[in-house]
Image (cartoon, rainbow, N blue to C red):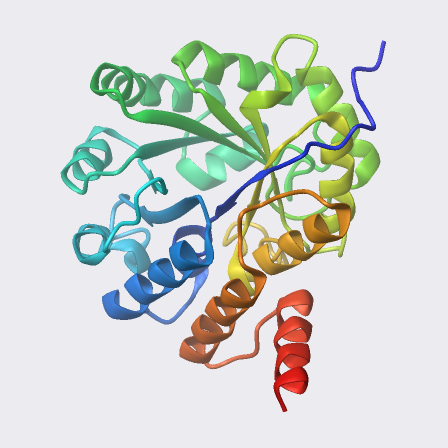
Length: 310
């Protein structure tokens, strides 16, 4: 029996990943000051969860080498969850030093992608994360998992819902309290989204899952609506549509956070986020990067605000 429901949630939590997932894919290095300014704008707009930094080897991701300096400069807003990607114990120790509220471990639903991304099998990647998971649980730090390529892989093509469910089970066994179902290369469609969530929900509650969609084929908003209908109430976005995937040719950025908020407003779903301030955050980081914002809703919203003020 399908477990989807057409009932929409009254509110959703939006996780903005632009300071980490967005900026780590930029060829140019963004200064600590500009990263901190982006985080401040996001929290001022009311974003409740910000994926702020990544504690990975600077050899592989030089854009994220300044994570500790960034977090030491952020004036934190009470109630906001600040997250960091932590691939190993060294990264976890840095996250603890930075005072992160949440650490994120990551795997893939595709064996080929796992090998290309982190040079090991899915099973080996889960094994590597065990010490991090155990330490986070012991220290009372939120533990979240992100699973890549849940709706398609650049090397294997379509991924079966069963493969996604197997990785989900392993992440649950590690103690993750929130799990991101990620369409890393943006090939997902509403039908695929529903099939994946239906499979997962045969064993786990919808409340612990999020939707992390990229907009490569322009399907991210449709996929979010499909996820809402399945009972998902956590979504990831990146202001100005920043991001991509260095291991997936042609993969565009995450769906813009501004576009998600505009969608939710139209559906009468509460986000707690001020769209004007959010769009301004997207416009400012786009100015820093020297290009227009990729958020249609954000750009149109600011243009309307400017027209009304004139």
